[in-house]
Length: 405
Image 1 (cartoon, rainbow, N blue to C red):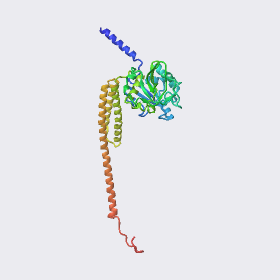
Image 2 (image 1 turned 30 degrees about the vertical axis):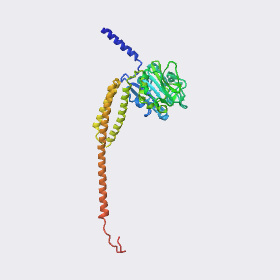
Image 3 (image 1 turned 45 degrees about the vertical axis):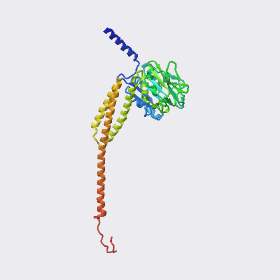
Image 4 (image 1 turned 30 degrees about the horizontal axis):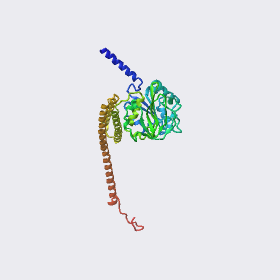
């Protein structure tokens, strides 16, 4: 029986591997490598949440006129865009377009994107917005490019519907849809102010719709193209049209899971623990910014910060351990470890503030002594000259005019 059981086990492993053979992720780290092109800027996009997702490593390419002038965008494209097809396909797993202006790409890029999806299994997603799909007059449409060929939507690429749409889930059993608590998406967070009007391609799978009254419009659509998966979200997820959606508690989890799903990587089902971890990670990041700013301020006064710096590095190492546990999907332990990291970070912040106060104490003492010394010196001079008049002497009478000089 043992040989039979062993053979059965090997067969199951082989079948499992075959089932996940299309999944894209970094073989060295296990992370999904995301190329985020478009509005990878500021706090008003999912970028800050994706940066805190341990299962994803992000490379951003700012390419939206909403934030930058065209000259800067072309410079960013030269610096950050992959320069060869091998670089694109070998070092990235998902390409995400979010308000990425089509005019900033070269024709070879479009060919690379399509080939990488069909032949090498990369995921490709496009999110709605004034530069996505070609939605606004004066913004060239994506229609006619080879990227449009592999998107799961077609047709009215230049229509941008100003009507308010509410989310309606159509395929609750879908892995991506099932990975999120959609029942918490309630008014006003389930409302999009503007969205792109699109048509469904034959063979594509519509996961969710936007309802404007009784009219149904495409919202979330996915499609398999060759060995890769493509994804379209018709609404904007930045303030232009998604300002309410951004208030959803699971907004960051939505973006993370969308990337994982598009990469054909299994989306973990423990959404609550993952949500707690990422909330803690962002709290740690914000707290560390304050800590490092205080430390930098103190160092300008030549205070001894070596011991504090060593403690900060040790705490950062614990944070990396928590990330490793998260990647291994031991979410409960990862959350526990992150709580310890945040608590220690708060203690270090208090220590840095005490160090700042000690450094400033000497500044206050020195300033006080300088003021006192200045007062004593000027007072002594004033007393000598004006009160005691020790430097004055009487002038004798002149013989010529009989008066004092």
